[in-house]
Each structure stands twice: as C-alpha cells, then as structure tokens.
Amino acid sequence: MKVIIVMSAHDNVGNAVEDIARGDEVAYDVEGVRHTFTAVGDVPFGFKVAIKPIPAGGDIVKYKEVIGRAAVTIQAGECVHIHNVEGKRGRGDIEGSKA
Image (cartoon, rainbow, N blue to C red; front, side):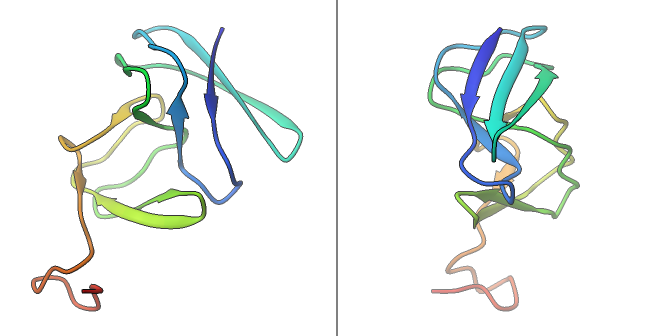
C-alpha cells in the first residue's frame, strides 16, 4: 500500500511521498479517518494526486487553498500537474483573478 499526505478535509489533492504506479492501492488519513483509492496512472514522488474527482473548471485545493483549476476532468487517483491544471492568479482573462 502506498501512502500520500493530505493536510485537510477540504483538500482534493494530496502529495506522493514515494513513486506510485498505475494500479497501486493508495491510502491517506484525514482527521483520524483512513481513506483509500486505486491510482489510475503513474504519480512520481513529490507530485500531486487527486483524491476525489475534480470536474473541468473545478478548483484544485491543497492545504485548504485554491492552487489552480482543472483544465480537464481529473479522476480520483490521477496525477495532477501542468498537463491538467491551469493557474488562476494574475490572469486578465479570468474574472476575479488575483494579481
């Protein structure tokens, strides 16, 4: 069983503390409750992985903070990185983006 770190029940991604391969069972604890899922793709050490489905355009939340938005629908167990994430800050094309 592989383990990831998830800091808050508000988060929808966690961090891989070791390489995760497609098909690996993955576990994390939040507020004393153990959760598990199956990796749907490879997730390298240090990368983010979705712990629940994130719809296209949905916020990506880590440490209770929005760190971007999903460029496409992201499945639980999928690597979350530049290929499926868009920034939200300092963008003139997104209403309400912060500089």
